[in-house]
Length: 314
Image (cartoon, rainbow, N blue to C red; front, side, top):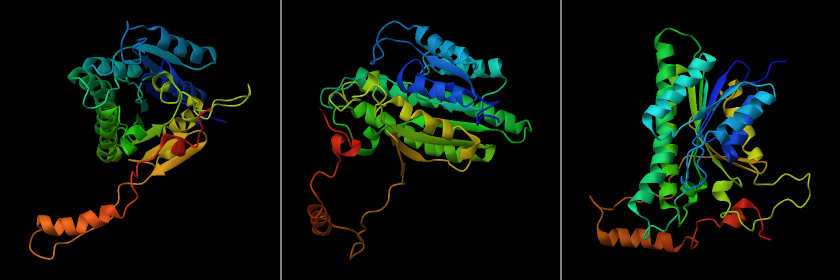
């Protein structure tokens, strides 16, 4: 019996640790050959010396389990590095079929305290990094289709966050980048569908090096054989599914995933609509319509982390 991703090749960025590592291992388990990309810096804020060790360790783990994998040390937010990453996949495995964008950093600060560098660096790694790899993967798939290849196969899985959906007071840079990634994903999905390529985004919740303070105090497993509800291993199977032929009909979608739950997020809908009684609105008319509307809504309709996660601190 063949594996779902047998004969396919994949790139996973930020795959040396955490979510990316779990995703790379899952894709390999499902049969894909994997390029494991990671810049290998020690700090979750992108600080520290670059190191090939994290990517090489994951690639070695895949090979030890009987799979195929190569490591790639590089900053995907650099345009030419992203080109080289896609070129490596094609050189090693003959083609690229799956791109999983996961690489990211954090520079948390309230908007009134955030520096220009803290804003730029997070936008650069998350949003530009996603664009760079997507661009070169798209060039690869489009060229193959233009050359007459029938049945071009392409899957993109991008990593957004619920910080985009519900806001995150101390992460204006991160929330903005993750919102931009959703826009990039839906645009890419429309542009590449005719070539046989799908693009989707996930909002994962997982306890990793980047989120250790966010989930500090939330309940962890008490038994040795109990899986952490916030383990990256809860997220990886969805990435494997979206990378597979079974997900051919899933395109331009946003899914929240964690701890045995997948939620399909619908596109924004109009909650209320008001028409002017005259040719154009006046301030007074808007005040009479909108102020009562918002006054009738529950105060603070953003969700609390503990309620949404279904977890308790302790």
